[in-house]
Image 1 (cartoon, rainbow, N blue to C red):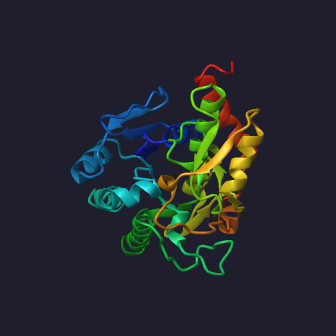
Image 2 (cartoon, helix red, strand yellow; image 1 turned 30 degrees about the vertical axis):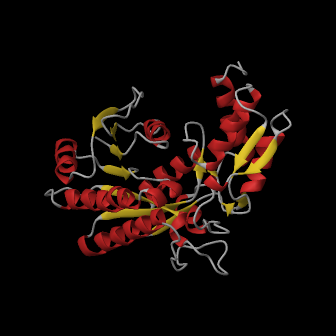
Length: 315
């Protein structure tokens, strides 16, 4: 097997499958037992990363040359509500993978550990954020991803493992769950256009500025980092630009012909929110040649039209 995607049942998984297959790789993909992967392009396996022996059995049987570790509890909001589960999945799960690989004799795969721009946390004067920026994580999710990155570096240095670490900033696209802001807004607008709800949108903090990328661009970055990234190194992956949630919302509102009222919903506010998160992506570009192909407007249009089709208001 050329490549194994651990945690392919989530949002990014199907996109990464398509990216790897487009390069002619024989791909395996894992999911939880209740999840479904509809792709016929890859071999599919049930796997719970909380059980290290399951990971080892799968790796011993197929010995993938590349391992993309996508499995995570990836919602900041959910991490406030379920911090213990977030720690179990994001930190213990990653440790189980690294220990499973290390325990197999004569097996030296390349591993991509997916971290997050949230690791940087409370930014002071640093913007855009370079990989050397001190970490000040501001939520439970960010803490787990920062710890995962540290573990990856330790295992790369101590055991000579081929681990590349990426801090992925916000990536969006069709199929993302609506507890993420762009997907939430696109869904609400489509529901309003379909007459399924009054023309009032519920929003949280609109002043926060985030670095948004199309998920397809992000998966291309993952592939290139696996091929060209240096073991033990951390790479930011993002657009290199920050836009406010207000700007993102306005793009979607401009794509709609409805007159929509905006209301702030306290339930959508987080206990704390980082004002600005923007990636410095020079290292990624220099080492891999990556550059984004999709604009934010194109991505949001695609997401909105997908919801419109689901509600029968676009052919």
